[in-house]
Image (cartoon, rainbow, N blue to C red; front, side):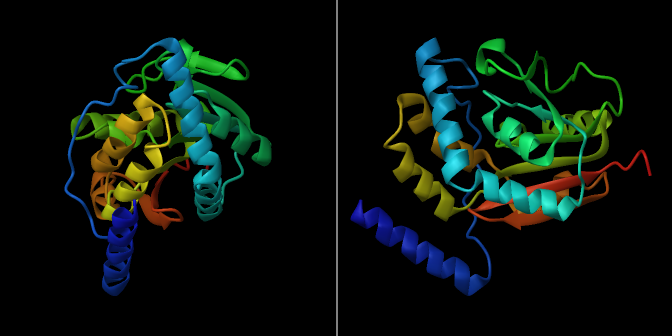
Amino acid sequence: MQLYCVRIEKLRAGAQRRGGLIAVRQQLAQELLDDDAGTPQEVNRSLAELWWINRHLGGLSSWRQLLHAAQIAPATWLDVGSGRGELAALLAQMSGAQVVMLDRRTSHLGASGCRVAGDALQLPFTDASFDVVTCNLFLHHFHGDMARQLLAEMRRVARRAVLINDLERAWIPYWFIRLLAARFSRITRYDGPRSVRQAYTAAELDQLAQPWPHKVLRLSHYRVGLILWCNRDL
């Protein structure tokens, strides 16, 4: 444990000298939660742990930063890859928006709110159905053509903007999540470090979004944000 902490501090110092994060090589891998590789109890526990991470380790603060940068007060909101939907519901409550939570499996969705089971690559909604479409810690599951299809599909159903909040791939968050995940359940221990290794850097996210008007932001807690502008009602 002490060795890991020393290594993290050295990496932190190096990143500060360079004015940014030290990127780790991207490594694509299937995560257990994606494969439903666990009992319903294990899956539910892992989803609960993800909510704890979001609540206590920068999920709320980084979303406040992203919403402030977008300067949008949405009335309707779609959250894609919502899981149990606690974060989306809380943010929507704070903004006064009506939220719809979408996930590929009904069993992943929470028990309350407007919930839809559907494919993120073929969203079951008409064009410009929502003021804002969001996803949280979700984009890193998609790469190449599938990632571009996901962005295009979310932008299709958005009226104002698509807002994306995800991990930034770098050594500091990688070692941090490895240490933290050791305290969690089997699925989270396995998936956590792999999520960081699959994630994008800010530069890669900027390149991915090139077909559309967009803005990339570095957020707190080693997260990166992406705003895709739509402005169909302007």
